[in-house]
Each structure stands twice: as C-alpha cells, then as structure tokens.
Image (spheres, rainbow, N blue to C red):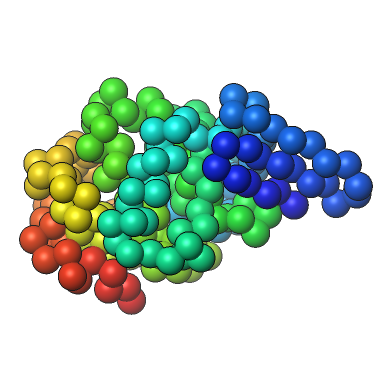
Length: 198
C-alpha cells in the first residue's frame, strides 16, 4: 500500500517494513491497460514518479480551493514523472493520484499547467476513473477546468493556453479541439456549472 503526503511519500509494504521517501526520491507505479487511469500513456509501463514540485502541488490546492472542494474531495496526491509529455489521473494502491509530466510546462506555460491539473482533478471529482472513457467525460472536465481557471482569476486566454495539445479531430475517447474549446469557454463564462458531472 502506498500513502502520500504533500512533501513526503511513505511506502508501506504488505509485510512490516516502512520506507519514507522525501521530495526528490522516486517511487515506481505500474501503468497498463487495467490501470484505473485516464490519458494513459500507451503500453505496459513501470514509471518512476516523485512528489510533485511545490508549484504543482500548489496548483492542485488552488484548483480545489477555487472550486470549493472539501478536503475529502481534494485528497489527491500530486506527483511528477516522465510520461512522454502527458498527465494522468489514476489510483495507486487506493490513493487518488495525478501524475504531471513537467515537460509540458515549457510548451503550455504556467496557465496551461494549471489548466491540465484542473482537468485531472476534475476526472477524480467526477468519478471517471474505472469507467469507460468517452468524449462526454472529457467535455465535463474541460467545463470544470474552465470554471476553475475563471475562479482563480485567470484570463480566458490563459484557460485556453493548453488547447494546442488537443487533436483537431475527435477520437473514441476525446472530442475534437473545437468542442473542447467550447466546453472550456462555457466553464469560464459560467463557473457555476463547472461542477456538473454525469
């Protein structure tokens, strides 16, 4: 079982040993098709992650505060890891986790990073993990993320700063870029609808 805190990772094995990992230490998480994750990197992987750098942890907390989430709703552990320029929401040993690849930040800036973190928080909030991924879920979390950005005082342009990462064409799991821009904009314009899921 793996337990997380803001600055410390504590891994407790199923036997007796307890290992404490400080910021900068590594933990391995296993990701494959059976993982309850969204935005999954392709393949069966064993990835090294570490407690999120302070700025990413604060982004998560700022999103939760802006959206008025309770401490239980926001019991999500931010991690950084190399995921090929991706971010995922997943559950590791019963803990809700977001893994953010810092390679994204130079491409999308700090507003874009906040948008991605808000998007992943929304997957946890809406209970999407462990359910079949579809385009409707992505639009729900884009709506949430747009609302969060507005409530954090970010501009609409800031909320849209990650859209270049989106495919112009729809897929089985993700809507087209234009539909996602519309959802983010709707959340930003009407933040009171940002927490509508399902």
